[in-house]
Image 1: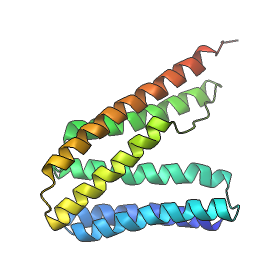
Image 2 (image 1 turned 90 degrees about the horizontal axis):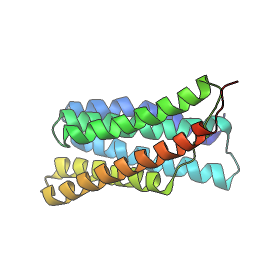
Image 3 (image 1 turned 45 degrees about the vertical axis):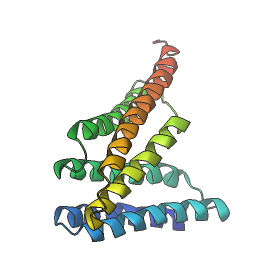
Image 4 (image 1 turned 120 degrees about the vertical axis):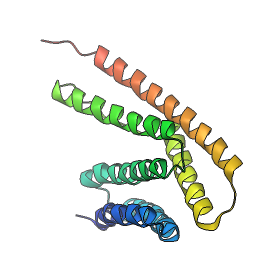
Length: 180
């Protein structure tokens, strides 16, 4: 266990508090929690690289913590009708598809190493921006409806592009598999 791993575990622990704050209409607290989670993500990455505290466990925990936070917030924001439900379905489906593809590859003896693609990094960045803008708009009533609409469509397009890119990489990987 490294310091970055403890910070990542802290992010896991933050998720239910952020979700409960949002569901209890403490949007400001949810925004603060989301900001703390984002800062801690940057801090754990910095410490891991700067002080050579990278670990195999951290390589798995970090993206899982990120996904848990984003998917949880997308689901709650969809329930609260702050983002369209169709977008929530696209975002969650993409993540389920990726997890399913990795698990299937492992089960049939053709494990797939996942490396974040540029489109996936852009997708995650836009998802974070959409959640932050939505929470900020809810907390402070900035009336950012136009900006939020643009972000919703950007996230939808990037999520679809990311899912397509991973699907192509997965099918190419699986095509090289021959049953013996």
